[in-house]
Amino acid sequence: MRLSPFVLLLFLASSKHLGFARHVRTHDSSFVPDYFLRVSYTQVAVACRDRFSAVVNGSTPGPALRLQENRTTWIRVHNDFQNDNLTIHWHGLSQSVAPFSDGTPQVSQWPIPPSYFFDYEIRPQIGEAGTYFYHSHVDFQAVSAAGPLIVEEASGRPPYQHDGERIFFLSELFNKMDEEIMAGLTAPSTEFIWSGETEQLLVNGNGFPAHNNNNETQTAAPFGIFPNGTTPSCHAEVTKVRPSTTYRFRAIGGVGLSLVSYMFEDHDNLTVIAADGSYTKPADADGRIQTGSGQRLDYLFTTKSEAELKQLGKTNFWIQMETRYRPVNITSYAILSYTDCAGCDTNTPNAPPSTPPLTITNEVQNWLEYTLESLTPNNFPPSSEVNRTSASAALN
Ligand SMILES: [Cu+2]
Image (cartoon, rainbow, N blue to C red; front, side, top):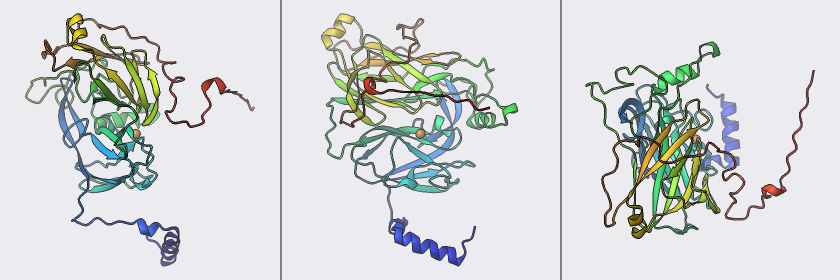
């Protein structure tokens, strides 16, 4: 569309009046952003499968980005796809300073075409310190083109003390290519084809061999085996911890379909301290964490002492994860493995247990929904004071 001189003049006059013109920035070749993300499609070995996936800087999930409250971070996103558009959305951030950097295609920006880049301007506000993630906002790319995003306090002093941090980024493996899934999901209703169920839960991109929920025939690459006929190797995520140490787990639900409920073998002291980027009063999680699509939970986790480990007679523990509300709920595993202790067993299991070591309740409601409270007073009424009245009306 070409603007008429009159409309253009009107636009310039009004935008100047509103102060828009002051925010126009042009980055010349001398500009150096804080982060570079290059997003491309490639064959990746995941859960002993080979999948043609959208990756960030060559991996899924992509690198963890660390931002700070009240500081502008520039992130240059390159679209290295052959044919597909791209935007990156910063999931959970309000983007009140630079809404045009929200990454929602055709809402806050035109998508980035292949071979082009876009510089995202991100300035989290005071009070936004917490755990977030980024993901593509085009088609089905987000299933793999995603990564952790952490906002640190401008003060450098988080309200809860801890000795270390562990990122627990949950994602899913689907046994179809993004293109095929999108074609099925967006087809006219009579030709609609379901994506199929997720075949493995991945933690930081790792997981044991995928289940075969869809009873699909294992075809040649890109769905099944590597082109040379070998099966790619795979392993569960190994979360390494030291004895007598308090960690802040940053759990990110980078999943599309799965509500995931999980527990740690022999460890039930989990205290939730933040939900979806907001600090909460400490809440005992009753030994179980659940994360749905897009949710983030931060919890404190204090490890066993060496004496306790000696008593238990082991230093590797299963983290058992199960999906809920799916036609076929799958069980997946990661491993909590102690290091830096006398008798620490550095040989972690290379196959899942023959029977699940933990029993995880099917119940997923009434977990912490009515327990979590904002750490800073927000004048919201407690659940005991909330009355809900629902009414329905029928018109003929
Ligand atoms: Cu999102």
